[in-house]
Image (tube, rainbow, N blue to C red; front, side, top):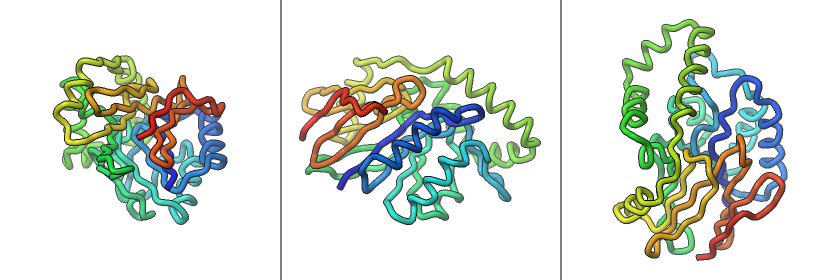
Length: 233
């Protein structure tokens, strides 16, 4: 089983070139299972009658893949409102994350903002998941909502957390997993802590990195096919 993990592409308006590179990855990399680790879109909100039209080529590609491959979508802090559209395609949708056994190891896949984020980012997530907040947001005209989301996304990216290895080590010590795989930090990283492993997939904005899991090996690569780091379990 070959698993492809991507995170933090932040697709939105005027992201055509990055979207094109991501499409090339999906079409050319060999994988059986796709894990979207959040912030795939810089903003995602499912209105009752339609979904966002930007990055429609990537959305269509995933729709086509959903009939052939297993797909998991873990919400991020920018695309927290994923839901019925993806579920209707048979995509497994998660708010926090999910566990999977790989090579006899318990692996936890999550976007990372709940684990690594500060108090304000966790509070924002709770607000986003509040049914009242979702109802009120639907009342805002679409163009106004897009403008508001663009401003909030920009402010959020300015507050991106830097990798705090001590904090990550504490997380690894308390979480019930042998390996934790996240996005959110935007920096590709494989780091061992007392027999446990933390992996950050990186992003599809500056580093253009992804994680490939095959035959018990975790491989961080970039879009040029260069292997940045690897771990065999």
